[in-house]
Length: 159
Image (cartoon, rainbow, N blue to C red; front, top):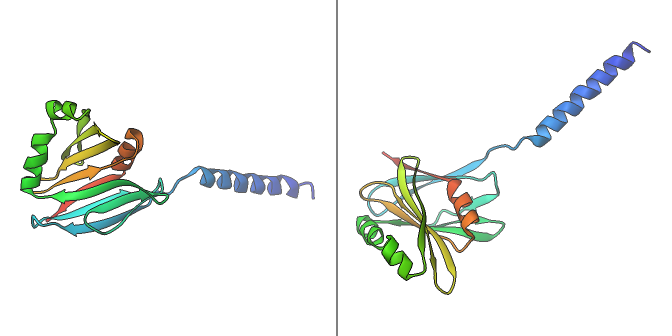
């Protein structure tokens, strides 16, 4: 019986270590939808759902968390891209109590993250997917939550 006690203790220790390890791990999960946009492009949008985000299949599509809309995403045509690219500059944003928060590149697509303050604060994104297709993404969530949610999205032009 004395010889079996160390073996039993080792087995229990291995089980407890495994349970502790698994409890600390987060499984990555995602959802993807492919949208046929008016420009003729097919755009695959993937959302990392690990943090509890979900999205619908509509256009415009909405990304939510705990029933609260975080991002509303609308595909734009080439004309829409030209319109917004002219509007999103420091001079026009300043006239609307806004500013560019950051410009960057996400999955080989250029984006601008900016804010506008009128009766409420918008934290928005403008994403250029190619010469024909872009996205305007609006958010009434905080700057931090909007960015975190945006970072959970990836885009891909399907050939």
